[in-house]
Every structure is written in C-alpha cells, then in structure tokens.
Amino acid sequence: MNNTENSPAQGNILDKIVVKKWQEIEIAKTEISIKSLEESEFFSRNCYSMRDFILNPSLTGIIAEFKRKSPSKGIINDRNTVEEVTTAYVAAGASALSVLTDESFFGGHKKDLIAARRANDIPILRKDFMLDEFQIIEAKSLGADIILLIAAILSSAKVQKLARCAKNLGLNVLLEVHNLEELNRSLCDDLDAVGVNNRNLGNFSVSVQHSYDLADHIPSQFLKISESGISDPKTIRELKQAGFDGFLIGENFMKESNPGGAMKDFVSKI
Image (cartoon, rainbow, N blue to C red):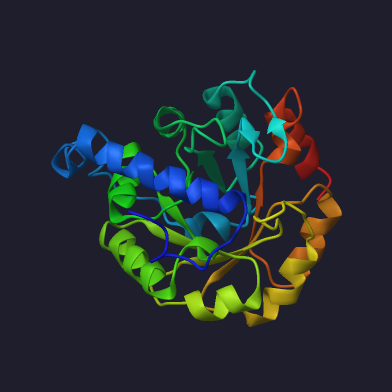
C-alpha cells in the first residue's frame, strides 16, 4: 500500500513518514485484531467533549503536548515521564493533552497515550499520522478522545471517510491545515475543530502568521486552533483576538527541564 490515494507528492520528510506509517499499519493489523481492540480497557468509555474543555472559561484553551523528539530538533526531552508531565499540564490549566504516538520520527509510543489516559481526566489527542480506519479504532482503544487528520497527507475523500469513522466511534476530530488550499478542500461536517499548523511540515519553518491568514476563512461552526510556534504569552492574547479558541503548545514547554512548571509560568503571563 502507498500514499498515492492520500496526498499529492510532498517530496520531503512527510513522504518518508507516510511510507513508514503504512508499513507500521500493515504490521499492526497482523498483530492485533479489530475485535481485540474493541474489547480493550478504554474502548467503551465515553470520550470527553473537546469543545466543552476548550471553551471552558476556567481553563486556558491550551492543548499541552508531550513530545520527546522531532525530525527537525532531534531529542527535545527524554528525561521526564509522560505521567509527571501531563499531570503537571493539567494542574497548570490545560484544556486538553496531546500525546505523540509515532515512534520512528517522534520517539512516542502507544503506551504513552495509555499512561496519560490513566493519569488524567481531560481530553487527549492522539498525535500521529492517521491514514487508515484501523488507526482510529486503535486510538479509541488507547483512550484517546481526539484524533488528528493532517490535510497535507490526505485527499478530501479520505478526510471525509476517516472523520466519519471517528465520529461513529464518538471521537472528536481535529483537522490540521497549513494553507487555504488545504482548508478549502478538506472541510466537512464531521470535524469538530480546524487547527492551523504554523510549522511547514515540508521544511519545518515556523510562522504564526499562517494562523492569522486563515482565521477568517475557518467557518464559525468549528473550533479554531493555532498549532506550533507559540512561545510568547502575548501571542495567545493576539490569537484570541483573531478568533482562535485553542492553542497547541509542546516544544516550548518540553524543552524545559520542568515542562509543567514552564506551562504554569507561561499561563501566569497570559
């Protein structure tokens, strides 16, 4: 299987990730059945509402991410455990958590999501490169509440198909876009939120301007999330004024020796 049904050629790290991900999906399908996933510990639990938590005025709107490494930065933080970081994020007012489950490129693991689920009572995003319905069923079994669909690697038809699968399981769906073309071709009714990735997944350059450029183009029925490159509390205030409801922040906290403390300090300045 390949990624031709999902995406125009990217010619970058994203291509390599997608090829590797398809290989991993095919292996995973031979290791565990859908029936086994459906009988797992968390599969029957009701997912938390992303909207309720993001819009809760007593919380921050921040989706705080646990990330050990990235293709662009290498090791970011391989010292802190997922439990200590995510519980500290929650204590600092996180509206949701994001947990990387991609192992090859981001040093994540499915067991990280399970550990975060057991330790916390707020929505958790499975941060991964979702290409197949199997991964969505798997996400539910791991305790996720939200799945990520990345427009850059999915056709509009595939976005619709995967979003429908997620909604049928009670999951929240976050669509990630980087430009207006991706946004316009990927919108569908089964989305809960649209995230603007300020990081170009082709060359990893970052500019929050992408969020401002797309803010008015995202229909009001969806939560508006700004992702990546947010390192100044002032930026949160400005993004809120531009209409954004939520803010995915990971590296800015994870690069510190105490990510939870870094978030607490950040929040105190918003």
